[in-house]
Length: 317
Image (tube, rainbow, N blue to C red):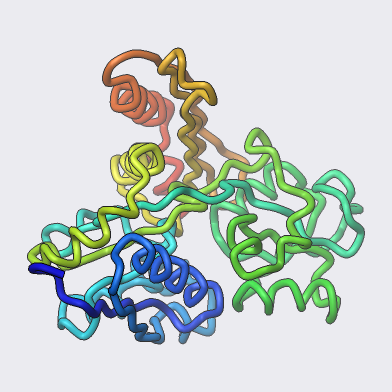
């Protein structure tokens, strides 16, 4: 084992999804490093304890700060987060670093509903349970005739409130989350990003370590997917430039050409008012050396010149 320790402790939230994601990272570490023992530490986050909507109590870091505190204290060696929950502020200043972004899952949101089909299938006046400002604003922009109500709870709870209890006619969930907890059958209606653009980092995981824990970093870097890491970094750069967070009505998706022969990237971004009546959009492609960085800067400039900051200020989110 050389200078590497033989045991590594991974921390994550207590939810089924968070545990599933952390255990997937643990298994991947075990495959990458023969003889490694992986232990888990499940932590209750502030976001799990909040009863109201997250935006009402200041969304930054509510799902990640408790885990990060345990990481900084040395209780755990590695933290696993859903990337879209991780604040875009640079954790290096706090002594933390994202050591790996594993291969990204499906980036789409999907509609889980009683009537089946996509958004167009919902009748006028149908109730849609969703609390995230990004989803709320885009749904109201697309279907002002729908009644959008706050919903809380884990993936299983949200599905149950629609399918079993009928509290809502529909809800919106990330396809990747449903697939990871073995509920992929409810992800039959992914929503085209042209309609509902995903959050920055959606479908990706952040494997986080202490900056000075070189042994843990070297363990985790084996899990890094360079393509996922660069796309997610570009998306998060857009959110950071607008001083947003994971609970701002900002949607961003960066993609690389499927065959990559052209070296072309596409980035789409959308900044919305709380009710979706104001929107600033950007959509462009670039190819060649340094294309993704240049594209992100262009998208940021386009959003700013279009008044994105004013739209966000008007939201007071």
